[in-house]
Image 1 (spheres, rainbow, N blue to C red):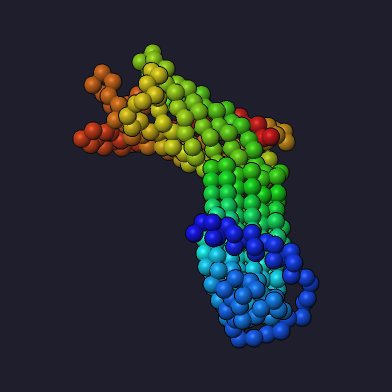
Image 2: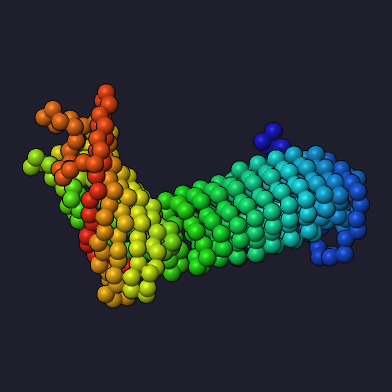
Length: 338
């Protein structure tokens, strides 16, 4: 079966080179059935027609779709596609595509797109596009308006939301990239060095855009004369008050490592930091503000839960194998914007 699919795709690629010539004036017909181009009801002239319904048993080459198209391996259209398109492997369209495209591997549209595009591996739009893209990797070569959901998302210009592990875009002025790594040209990149009541030295790195960024955190403290390290991940955003003044709201979870025991039990400090930031230069700022802390630990040292010097508690709750502490603390430090 795999060999059959491979041969079919190779034949298809050769056929495209032979017959894919420009002809914008397409004839219309209600339906066509193709086994494998050119074996079908349209024969060698199939690319001269736009169909209301198209059924490609293996693969088909057609002029366009204004309705629905289904193919077990691959659907190829040199004209516009409007409606529903389903393929077991790939949908390839060279002109404007609008509607709901669903494929097992890829939806590739060389022109503009609009609608819902779902594939197992990749969605690609060559021009301006809008709507919803869901795939392992989504690529919008020009402007994209809408929502991209995938492991990797790319848009030259984004007016909407990206949700994934890796996000990349050139213009993020009206974008909201949400991910572990969001790389934005002229985006927000910042180092912070802060201190607090339980983690004495924190180094934070922020990347994304001003309104939403990812935070990578590491810290150092001590407890009972032994070292305490922390590392964590968070998300946050800046709210501008004036040109020099901002409020940053950051949420993070930090694993606490006591006395170099990196295989320790649950020992997590969850933080909500609200910092006032004042810019003393274009890239350099001072910050200070309160933090709400929730510390959950299974670590017991000398009969007591925890490996942090907690100054006081607003609330505690002890379970059968863990204990929770909550308090309000403070952060202060400086930041360098890259």
